[in-house]
Length: 340
Image 1 (tube, rainbow, N blue to C red):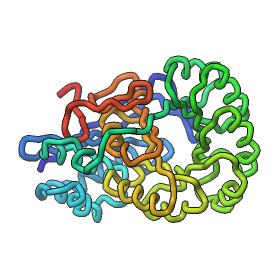
Image 2 (tube, rainbow, N blue to C red):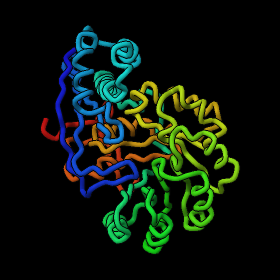
Image 3 (spheres, one colour):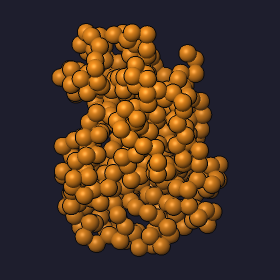
């Protein structure tokens, strides 16, 4: 098996701001796994909020693991994941990129999409939201109108004008709103905002409080009129059980979890514990988004608009048509590089 690593730079349509920082150019890592004439693709999405996991650190981790990765093929992606975890487990972003490539390669070798190999169906899939990053109110309205007609918008908040932003955006659409404060609120703020935001058509809050403020979240869970989903508080498999009884649901990020293999285990555990399940994306190309799409039949909600937020993609794959996932007639994760 041959491992190839390539840096990719993804320009954004607009500067993308959340409570944790601003991005204008996304620097990710493309992972290619070639074996017996087939090639699978995965993507490691760097994050300004996760300084340990840059494209450079992912490359270094994967290069260190190259002898283990290239030691032989695999019969299932789980087999490769288990083989490399001892040397890649401390860099889940790199592990995720490799795992995505393994699933894409596996499906192409088997001659079927990954979702079909898992025994899933594409009926009644959840719709994706489109994310509006923090900006002036006027620019946030403009960003929403640029993608008019989407059924759901995720609104990034964490400003002094959070209620004013939602009030103004509501004037311009009848779509569902989801609010992501990215840890910027307190428990009291969350409880104070919730009644009016519910009246303004907000479906749920995502990670309003700091990730370790479990006491604050218990207070919110006891009184909040809106459901609350964990994001920063639920990063790994071990975090799922901690969220039960404190959050209404979890938002799984493949990069933080370490790929599709652990994400499926997290989904199963969440179901056992009565938690709703969402999968979210980073700012990434259609390579990473297509991997997320394989999980759609297992989800209640999804945020997979990363490739819509960039102005130039590097691949064809699963795409969004006003929130609806459109799957290509391609095996694996459905990825075809545009320059291949």
